[in-house]
Structure formats: structure tokens, C-alpha cells
Image (tube, rainbow, N blue to C red; front, side):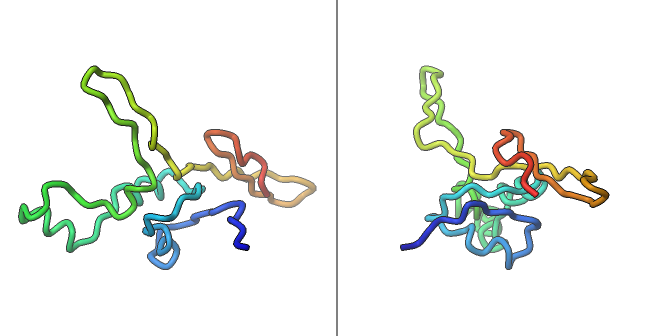
Length: 117
């Protein structure tokens, strides 16, 4: 039986670190910096961008678009949230000293992972 990892921590966006995130079946939260989140959301392959620029594609194809799906606005203006998600959780690294030792803690905007060391 496979057990899902308790935490996916993305320290930087090199290709060898983001490989598995492009699978549409990936559905776990990823703890990352705000910069990494923006890079992933905007990422597009050069070949796909070229097809869009040549007007062979009507919309840009974002490699990691499935990690952040916003709600849909209905014609009457109401928001439809079913299926929306944001799997990219930004964090802040906090450096503090505990018992004369530097300790790094992760604090997310939702405080879900506060005080992980």
C-alpha cells in the first residue's frame, strides 16, 4: 500500500525538482516560496508558446496550470468553487536562535505548517 508523503517541500524550481509536478494526476499540496509559485503558474514550454504565437493555439498552455485552478464565474456573476484548488502553498523561512543554535522554521500563510524545524 502506497502512503502519501506528509509534506512536499519545493526549495527551488530546477527541472529535476519539478518533474513529477507536471503529471495531471498530482494532487498534493506543495510548500514553496512565492517566487517558485509564480514561476510554476507561469511556466510554459517553448514549443507550446511558439504554437500560440503562430496562432495555432487559441490559449497559452501552462505546464502546471492544474496545480492552481480558480473558481468559475457564472453568467449571473456568482462564483462556482467546485473543482477549484490551489495546491501551491507559499511559505516564509524564519531564522531564529534556540539554545545557541540557528533553527529554521517554516511559516505558511495558513499557519498549517508553523514551527516545522
